[in-house]
Image (cartoon, rainbow, N blue to C red):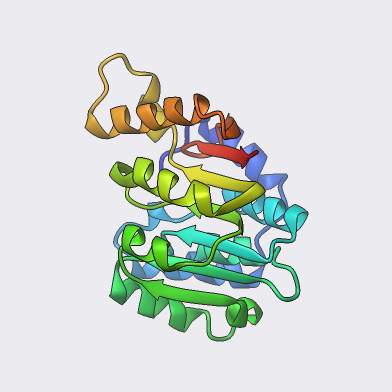
Length: 212
């Protein structure tokens, strides 16, 4: 995914942030050698932020929408409490099966539940009181994800949404359909009295949301 900041600034931030480690490096190698669109994956800089948030919260229950090759999955899982659990949803069955196989030797594997299916169909079947949610899935469903998940997020819980600046096109006066949908989503969150929010220019932009 194209970064919003300059390449020089992104490299500076990444080089002076906690580094990935062997397991995440292996996922990154797998992603860039085996996947057709490796740029869809979280990178080490964004991953270090997700890990930091999870470690600060020490959540018992994390939900992720959009597993892909599992880079962000592992970053989030690193902060789980001793009895914690992460549920990750992926619509592509083949991708999910391969990703799950890659995780077999990773210590956090036993804390992760991999579910295949459309997120909007699976969300109603999931338990409530989620501590931390990360969304990196279909952009045209962001509004629906949000309304489905806010009731399931506990008070004080955190929701993080990726690709919120959409290649930097979010400030264009003539927005394409996807960019307009994401802009409308950002406005919707800003005007939602149930939450506080902050948009962060990390890679393609993160919407950081805390439920009251």
